[in-house]
Length: 155
Image (cartoon, rainbow, N blue to C red):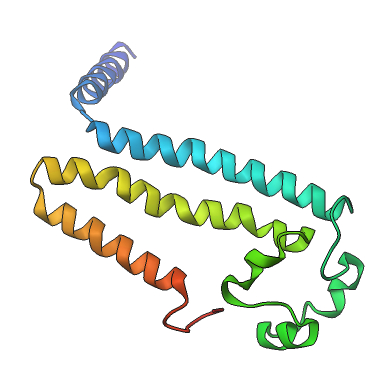
């Protein structure tokens, strides 16, 4: 039994030593903190806007009680039937509770781009061309996809 304790103790010491040697670059800590606090902020936005919508505090474009009749529809049929906007058209409809809830989703989606933009200056300062190029390409791809220019998906 005492040999078991020594092995466990040695394992714990090795584990503690290996943790002490890990150094996380400051830009990665900023990125992690952005995701941590940004995610919780986004969840709070989703919660508040959902309560405003489902509580009837804000008017609905589509009455929540009518939603079950639309659940089985394809998105294109739903948009045509309800005359709801598509793509970025929802921004003009944030006065309706059902569209207001999309603000939280858009906020959460934007966190990735903002996070990459936090990393970019540090990579450029380090002259890390590979990571800088990856970040630039990733931001461009995300912005292009979100823009709706490609007319793919729901845009």
